[in-house]
Image 1: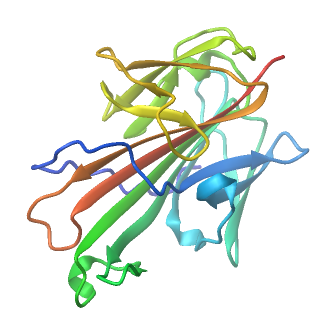
Image 2 (image 1 turned 135 degrees about the vertical axis):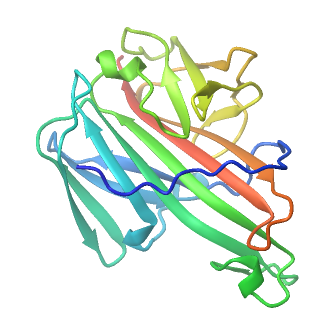
Amino acid sequence: MFYPLRRLLAATSLALLSPVVSAHTVWLEATDSATDYAVRFGGHAGVLEEYPPAKLTEVRAVGGAGEPIDVARQDLAVGVQLQSAEPASLLTLTFDNGIWSRLPNGRSENLPMDQVEGAESAVNAIKYHKYIARWDAQATQPQGQAFELVPLDVEAPAAGQPLRLKILINGQPTQGIALAFGEEGDDAVSDAAGVAVLTARRGVNRIWSGQRLEVADNPAYTQLSTEYSLVFHAQD
């Protein structure tokens, strides 16, 4: 089952900035069931935050051959629960956190800049996520996300071993993109081929990546922020 995707629009006058700060990401947490997941949203140090379910704009699950798997979605007052019709190889999400306009006093409002009197700047924040439930053929296949981390190693990652990831933006390998464990940082940076290498950690790994771009001549926002989280389990 597919939910509508608000595509990442290309901007005409963009300049790459330093890695995104004050990161907030979206990710899935599995329950004891092989088909049930909670959609989490949070910021620094893994602190969870409430969010309107409408911000989760796309959910997708696929099996080992890339076939789509239906996903039942339960919107709660401040979050979303998912249940796939059968165990999936991986799931992907798109989360539109909207436009946040900043006022001179440091306060931010979740509205376009031209709707907030006195706003000095605004960030349009889009989040993507991939949860690898089974390390099979789909783990190394691009899933068509506008910003995506794609593992390059056929074998499932082992703790303490290097993990090669390719960063794709609009399907193209991209240099100079930072990756880190958690919510932000630069534990690795993609090379000219779009490849970065991290050392897998024992248990659940959650890898962050992001990009922030200046946007010119747009009354609604001055920056486009894209963030990504990749979650997988590393064998001992």
